[in-house]
Image (cartoon, one colour):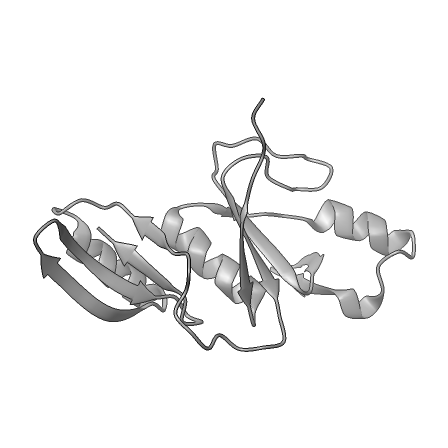
Length: 149
């Protein structure tokens, strides 16, 4: 038996984070407007719980990205495969991540990927060149560390 899974990232602005990571990974921002519209129409989702993003209703405090080839539920827009969910939390990030993503570009594409990601809003934190490891550590727009190998 296998399980569906997602990585959940606490953040201040889930829609900004989803937009960054969708571009960074070549993923799609999930369109949850069908379920949001349904909940709003039924009175189950108060006005303060949703917003409009790119012309569609969306949950205010969460946004997700999914791999474009993975299945998803068309009634909710929720992915059933590789996905990242960004959820708003009140406290800011204060320490180094205990978990991070490694993006595998390969040595021939590493620098061009770093350039592309910094143009999207990432910041280079360190360039590591030591025996057994050559990579660049970056931070996403909210300071979450990730590496490009």
